[in-house]
Image (cartoon, one colour):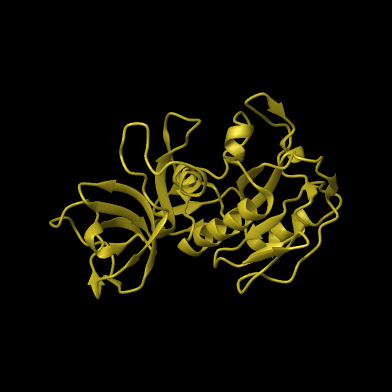
Length: 271
């Protein structure tokens, strides 16, 4: 992945789809932040919205579910993604940040065994995790991100760090906590920015988990709980399968793949 003249290129990067929804260039030295978002809708609908001049909203890129990236605005121009925003003494984060939208439906409501997004699309339980948002105290259901999306986001942000000296990675939920919930708890935001910008250890001295891993066993069972006697919840994962790592317990990883479950960490390559 490469940035040249503020335009992204790479094997998983689509042809640019220009959006008119932007301001001028950043003031010298102001660009130092990346803001992570979810689209709260499918790719085509979100793309149409972000290039519609009547909507007056945009982002620099969209990352689709398969990891492909579409750029909408050159990285030297301000997109309209942050809105009213505040963080550690600064307001109006369009002036300081690049906006990355990831195709994800956000929080879901449950009806029987079906989970629905606000716009009506239904998802199976394998597409969902139950988690507590950083700005909330009770669990909700959330649409999962794919390993391909997270890997693409990592490669993109690394390229932005190398090109522009990015110092901060924030969620929209952190700069507008009273009105925004993206990217939500299904995205490993804390691990993501620690891996790219910070120390590899938490304050309590525990090792920071990676965002993704790859199965190295020829066949690996995925279970409902982190122990070898728990029920198998899907067909075994095959060698080379990529997984999103959500949690760790006694040598087991909670992973998101076609389902969310537990696998024995010894057989997951996190290098």
